[in-house]
Image (tube, rainbow, N blue to C red; front, side):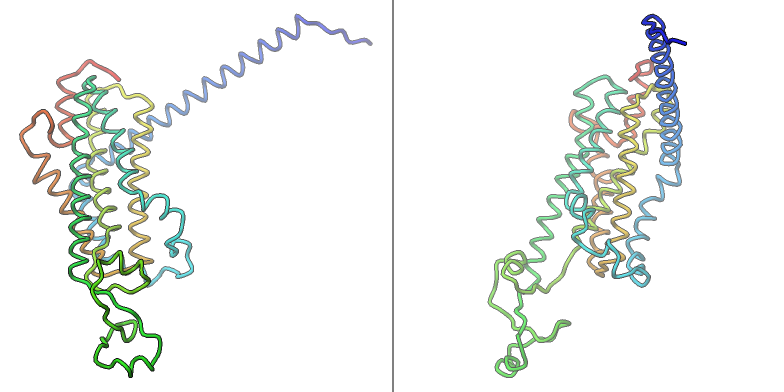
Length: 314
């Protein structure tokens, strides 16, 4: 029996294979789109619930107050007990940058979907601009207070030096210390390899708390906006989920810092300042001003924009 090559039959087989692959591709796309819509709708509904919106700041406060108690159960050999872990280096040191990129993208796209105005969307970003300015002022003020209230010390090398300088010694947790002449601040002291002692405020807990509260405030309006009948594209849904993941990551990093590096009361003060910054920005300061060309109010102002622009999709 001899087999004969049939070009026409081969071409028909290839066409059939392409059609099958095309149908599979469409089915997978529809399945992923359905899963994305269902998951974002569920997540947006949870974040828009009044229990979350009214009590998230309270839950975060409880976490900051009682989180250091977790240090009694965590292992000192955990990978998160190393400050050089990639999570700390990649995200913690650029916490505000990550928040601005993802949260800013979400605010801009959502407001553009609602208003179809580039200028109007940029104006909604003023909330992040004011929050960034507030964070910069906090850092400068805290740096000034730390430098003004602390002192630089040099550890003594041995008991011989203790007997040589009995009048210049101060008691501390790390042993006898020799008070040095005035330095130019904490940064210069640590750079010289010395020890700095004074009041401290945890910058990490401050910025993480502030970013958590801002993210929760901004993304909570996504559900109500969709409930008004706005057509939301896949790109906005993906950015929304990235913001939710970022919020979860910031909460996780707060837990790691409180459990593995407990610093009381500096972390408590940092969390309190983060809360005051959020409260002052969204409920006592910028966002409660009379709406103008640079201030459009709280994130829920997007709902008013959506009602005024019903009929336009994204």
